[in-house]
Length: 212
Image (tube, rainbow, N blue to C red):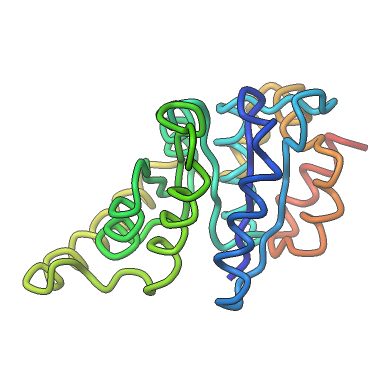
């Protein structure tokens, strides 16, 4: 699994800590982490949580990432923004049990974590446990055991509903403010990470046209 890490500007100072914690947990499982930044609060590319929602959608819909880890101060804004775009099923994770149950019950492809609220002494230890519960036990297996069948059925229904209620990302990219899209994909490592992994030529063409 290719996991993309995205930080918005208010929590950019924690990027290296989050990346190190995520890699510590998931690389021994065989997963890969691509860090899309922000890397420092002073980055030229200033990502807001709304831009993170668009970026998560670009990465997931294009196939450049299989999973996105993001967040903001509370995690709420990032979750709302991510779920505003197609191809993203984002959960809000506060503690390790959230990680396990989101993976097993909701089987999403993106998580928003609060990196400021209740993130003090030992915050990285809680984060490590969240990642272990999120990625360490598979996905969509259901919990508890007597709820597996209805939960898996409801997930399929939700996927079907989302497929009908969201416009194609290519149409959205064409209709959004070009500056907003351009700023979203202007991170210093975006092109290096995204284009070799992108599996959707139409999305790649639109983004290259905007950033040429």
